Length: 329
Image 1 (cartoon, rainbow, N blue to C red):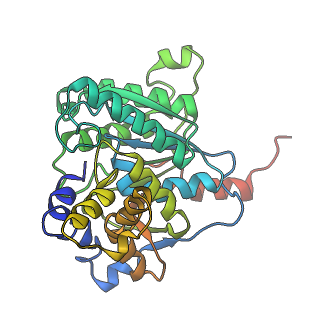
Image 2 (spheres, helix red, strand yellow):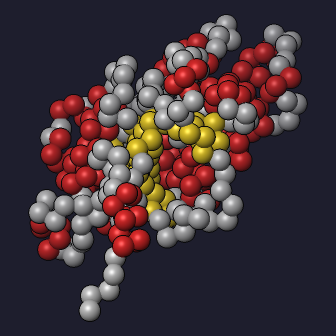
């Protein structure tokens, strides 16, 4: 989860979020020229495709990739949201303090369902591993469960943590990422987990991947300007974790006691204050990244296209087949 420093810094003397530092800060101008800007598509060019968004915790996709998930679903994908843990060590509902395991798990599960609804996902899958305990689990077990889901929904594209990223300290993040990378490849192999095939599933390899990270190797930037309000709502729905829930209304109430106000929080109701707070502070990184590419808001990914290492079939071969394949006489 990426919320810890965000909450600590923002609620103490109004410091900037940990997301204020642009992920492009350490990149040279020459490396930026190799980054592809994915713009909005007209119509639904991805109709018939399936998107699998995978997160270790209920705030991972909202913070890092909600705009892209919403964009792809709007453009025709059928979306599914997978949550690997049950978030049982998360914060208590709306309090920012530890609650009981049962309270945490239940509240975060409800938040996760609402996030899926906001983003337009068809359904969720909860693997229910204990929070921050995924380093203990069998990687092969995780891979087999993910292969089952990939084959079941026939996933074409995944959005997840980057298994090759730097600076990742959370074991749930890198365990899920490693499992996803292996499962995307193995799901297309007919001799892996044959019992799934005997149960009626078919081999199905994932074609492309959008990987996010704390310090990503950026190869693709996605314009999410049209989806920023959905991203705000997805984060607001994540009320058991920050930066979401009631932070804007709480800050406005605290300032009012001191005879102060912030114009950015508005003069309306608590809901507006919460939305404005998330958009101003929680989406700052997305706003700064977008400005570098001439759009209002953006998200950054290490994107693996079809035909790249571990990402489906080779488009060169597919193109050759289209041009040269002849009917059998």
